[in-house]
Length: 575
Image (tube, one colour):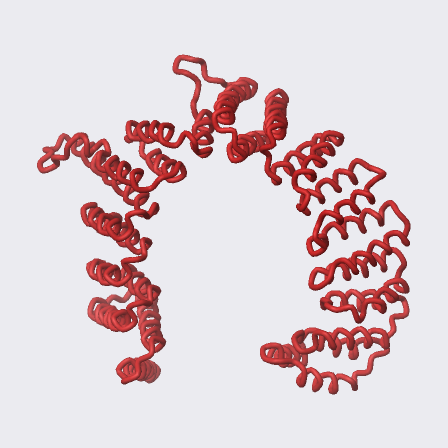
């Protein structure tokens, strides 16, 4: 009993403090939010305890008064900070969760009066009217008001169109239920046109008159296809798409892909075996490609060829056990690439896709020809040059070095990092250490700034792989004043030192001191690792840890200093 009274007093005191804050002269939004959050947490706690002990005494009185209080706080806050959309949304979420839906229409109305410039809020309100209040008429009125503010908003038209189709479907189901139960239809007096989706058709016609483009048209067609009863509407939209947007690649792409969904003619035997299914799929794909062939003749553009080639690549990537079908797909894809190349209507990305496909089929000679054509067309593309050089490397060409030089002659130095790394990696596998090191040195002269950080790390790794610790240390010494660096550059050197049979603490100190000179003001882990090294290395000096700690405290700034203190304390405690 004493504990109960204590808890009750604590709750009353906390609520009183929060109540006082929202009645001060200078109001702060955070105080209202804190009060709301406290009340919601309390409501959820009460709800959980009632469920646990199965106790519902005075439930309506207690919870109702709390919910009513939260609504009042939200109401004051949203009136004071009208522009805060998140506050309005939190208000709506609360009302939905705590069963005060009757209050929501007014909240939506108040919010939309202020935020009428946000289509998403209109859609949210209309969906609530349609799905929660089951009021198609209210949802329709909201969409019509929204379209007065946003007459060219595609999303509003799409959702309005969907809503009218849902409304028609709902009416059809109600009619079926009445008929099934042989009940008097009574006031159910909806014209057949409404049941067939005439209102949705009106929305569609209005939408396409305001918003042009095949993409929007296709989106409406996709929505209509979710409703089985709307076959006539689907056909009308499909016919309009072909009539209004013949010059748009998306139209042809949609029409072609639709052939995949068209099954065998009625009366024809349906394929059963895997082989028969593969033959049927081959026929469908041929029909698709026939449409694409007509499309690239009617609309010979890069965008149209991209649609065709993308389709071919997608089909080729589909798994099949049929060797014949896979062969057909490969042949079609290659034919499309070659024809688009002849017409000079291939993009840079598609040249790369073509080369990758040729390499997967071990067609190195053709891949090289395509790569040469690609670099001729896109001389300033580092991706294109990289692709060509990879083809040369894969095909064991003796002229790789010459082509790297050619690439650097055409490209800007700041984009060449990946090429320098590729050249060095190739050189390591086929040429002498001297040649590879010469490439790294040339690269460091050509690549400057932040891009050079990765190059230095690669150079150091190579030095350790090819010449061991002695070589790595020589490279480290040569680069130690060549900023910028990464922490990883120094950590690599520390790791190399630790891997030696006779690891020298004096060298580790040197690497830590060099790293701290660069990153000592931001990297708390470096300081902690330095201290651990002094504590755990056979030749470390634990007495140096105190000095390192105070140096860290002087150098580290802001959050890094706090992190260092926290981690050091945990380490001291044995964690």
